[in-house]
Length: 220
Image (cartoon, rainbow, N blue to C red):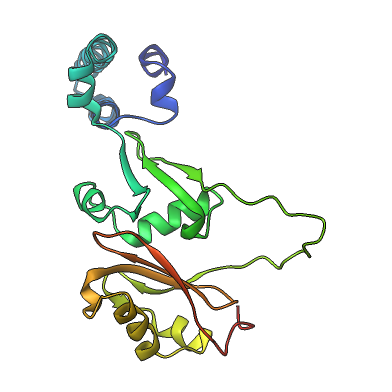
């Protein structure tokens, strides 16, 4: 407990990769004298103090040097930019669409089409910048909340969601072709809302929105 407190608040919150590794090693080292009564206590204490000192030193170095900080912790990257989902950055971060969808939902953004930027921070968290929304006027009636469901994710069709939405796979493929994507492998992600609004994000091009007639808009 004393060592963890000396290493700072980060070990109790969001950790950088090198901090996580050091914390895991400390936990392992602390178990060694506990498991064997013939091992002196200081055999575990010395490496714990050494690792804690190393962590503090590395933190000081990363605070003083931007190059060291990038080497130890990496840098933030855009998962969603002004053109939509950034496929190249997703590959670099070893991040798949399910991870992105789950994290944006956790942040309160279930609809990817409403996100202007999604930044994957060095601690693994995702920061979201929402697209500006038009302010409703007095003449506008209140609309129901819409919940998008994925139809095509990372090259695979979500057949259950296709049935739920009452839309055929061929209809979505035709929507791809309308925008010049004859091969569905060039599409990274597509989802649809209860009102038939279809959001499509190609792998290396700007995302776009189409509207379809669907039969199952009341099913979710």
